[in-house]
Figure 1 (cartoon, rainbow, N blue to C red):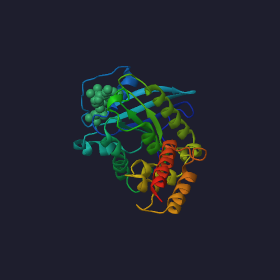
Figure 2 (figure 1 turned 90 degrees about the vertical axis):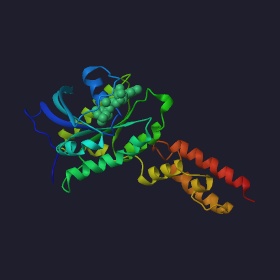
Figure 3 (figure 1 turned 30 degrees about the vertical axis):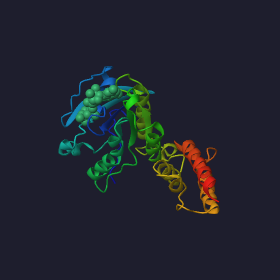
Figure 4 (figure 1 turned 45 degrees about the vertical axis):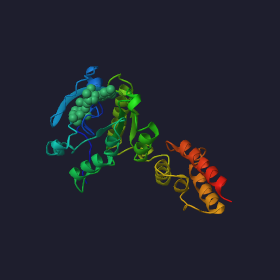
Length: 273
Ligand code: GTP
Ligand code: MG
């Protein structure tokens, strides 16, 4: 099995790691890296051609970390160039634009591309992923809210940060947590420490919240057929209430989903004789 354990120059002190950026074109990958490394923001869009490569040094606890950053082009046109760069990676910065739903929906396809390039022996479980919900400064155009992004990331065991390369919000915190997580992983023999490996909520809870968010009416939300009886509505409601009750469920968006279910039940019962 292929492992992602990086090469160490001096055991215990310096460490060399490889991180890559992934996400659709124009979501702000290069700007996030530039904001962190060069403390500046470029408003003009300069598409990355294939790959940009940079090296930076960071300090995590008592260790000096040499970071090789491969900033990938998001445009499909550059697939042939970037597909060689997925291997031997310890960390991935996965970016979407909170004002572009397509870029959020594309995150699964990015993971699939990486998985395919790593091949059948590649192991994505021992890579640290950080999801950046970028361009949060453009609040007016926002169409993917925090709980939706957080739910996607955390249900996969990924880190999640709200960022703006323009204002710098969230960028340092994101990189700091990202690098600490990678060092923890390296110190754990290249395996994700078990405490970070699983979400604190179930897949059923995450899937139910997503289903509720996209339901078309109150019947659909409760998962009952239009015209269902009071008993059927109450039964469906009780099942969802147990699954999503804020005292029991910590999944992002569970509180809103719970409220929506309560409202849906009230609305339906009003009209059932
Ligand atoms: P590719 O290299 O083509 O894959 O794109 P990219 O993801 O690297 O995007 P890039 O960083 O070049 O940014 C794309 C555009 O979005 C540029 O015009 C940036 O100025 C702008 N941009 C990036 N981050 C932010 C942000 O946080 N807020 C705002 N308002 N604009 C941003
Ligand atoms: Mg770029």
